[in-house]
Image 1 (cartoon, rainbow, N blue to C red):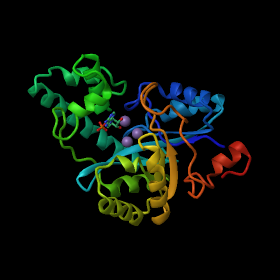
Image 2: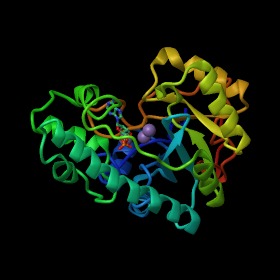
Image 3: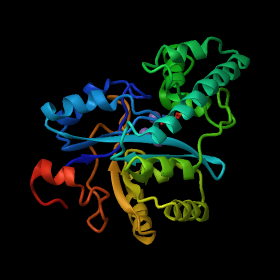
Length: 287
Ligand code: AMP
Ligand code: MN
Ligand code: MN
Ligand code: MN
C-alpha cells in the first residue's frame, strides 16, 4: 500500500519539529507522499520541499485554514496549493493578524483568572511569532505546572466556557475554499468528527461546502476514533466527496505519528486519485 499522509504540522504553526524534521520523520516512517498543512501559513513549504526529494518522498504543498461556520471553528485543508498565490497569501496574512490580537486577549483572560505572563510564555513556544495559538498556550501551561498534560490544559483552559478562551471570528468558508481554488488547490474538510455539530448541522456544512465546490473530507484522521471511520466514509459517499487520510501529527508522543494510520476503506475514492505528480513519482498505477 502507498502510505499517503495529507495532514501534519511543523513548528511554522503548532507542531514542534521543523519542516525538514517533519519530512525526515515521515520518510523514516515509510510515508511516500506527505502534505505539510500548517495552520494559516505556508512558511514551511519551501524548506520541506527542499529536503523531500533526497528523503525520497513527494511533498504536497498544503495549508489548514481556520474558518468560522455555524457558530463553531471549522478547519479546511488546502492540498496542492500554490503557496505563492497572492490571493491565498493575502488571505492567510489577514488570518495571522487576527491570531496575534486573539492571543493577546487570551493572555489577558488568563491573567484575570490569576495566571500571569501567559501571552509572553506562549510566544516562547512559537517558532513562528505570527502563528501563536492555543497549543502554544497549552504547552506553556503544562511547563509551568498549571496542568499535568495537554489534554487537561484543553479541558480546564482554552476551550469555550473556560479561562483563556476568547471568541474569535476566523474567515468564512467561502473565502477559505475560494483562496484554495484560486491557488489551484483542492479543498478538504479536516477531522469532521471533532466538531460539536449534530447530524443535521454536519449535513448542512457538507452541503454548503459542496455548493462552494469543495472536493473532499477526511475519513481516516488522527482525530477520529476507529469506530468513526465507517461513518465518515459513508458520509463522503453520500455527499459525493473524495476521501482523505491524515494523521494531524503535531509532535512525537502526541497523538498519531506521521503515516501511522489505517488505509482508506476500499470503497472510498481517494482525494489523491489521478494526481499526476504521484503517477510520475512512482511510475506505477495508483489506487
Ligand atoms: P487554535 O487554532 O489556536 O485555536 O488552536 C487549535 C489547535 O489546538 C488544534 O489544531 C490542535 O492542535 C490543538 N487542540 C485543540 N483541542 C485540543 C485538545 N482537546 N487536545 C489537544 N490539542 C488540542
Ligand atoms: Mn494544531
Ligand atoms: Mn485542525
Ligand atoms: Mn491540523
